[in-house]
Amino acid sequence: QRVQADLYPNAMVAVKETFKANGVLGFYKGAAATVSRDVPWNALSFLFHGAAKGKFAAIKGRAPNDRENLALASAAGMIAAVIMTPVDVVKTRIMTQRLGEAASAKASGGIVGAIRSIAREEGVRALFKGTVPRVMYLAPLAGITLSVYEAVSQYMLRSRNAKSAAILNRKRNLSYLRDNSLVEKPLRPSSGSHVRTTATASRTLLC
Image (tube, rainbow, N blue to C red):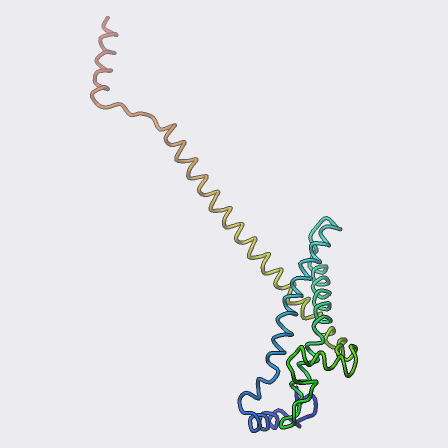
């Protein structure tokens, strides 16, 4: 990001100067702000997407198809991106601060302190700089990610249900065959009773 901000001419110089000034920890500058931005964005995207699907089903009386789900997921990612833009602004300022210079109030004091400082000195609108570029890449990202997640989860659910139904049917068939074999199995007479029955039949015929 420092190369993108023209603080260094290329990535090799950026790596060399960063390591020289702050060591290995210099490569993790702004990591807390990055996590504080990305984790809530993902959580909000899933939350808004689930709410949008529920509202769609309540209005249309059916689940959204693939195209509709893509649009709902993109809208969810867009709303989440707008909400998390202030944290992204703070993250960018922390990561693009020049090495060796004193930390300014706008890039120090933690995420909350930086947000307060920017809002106080530059106004609330400054916290939403870059909203349009963020939406332009995060909305499609959320649309693709959540749509793929939805498709894969539905496929796994159908596969599991089909497997469970097959196992249940197999158990029912085995139980049915076992019960029928016990009911329909003829009783084989013993050899002694067969002889007595034959003798009785012979005497009856002679009479």
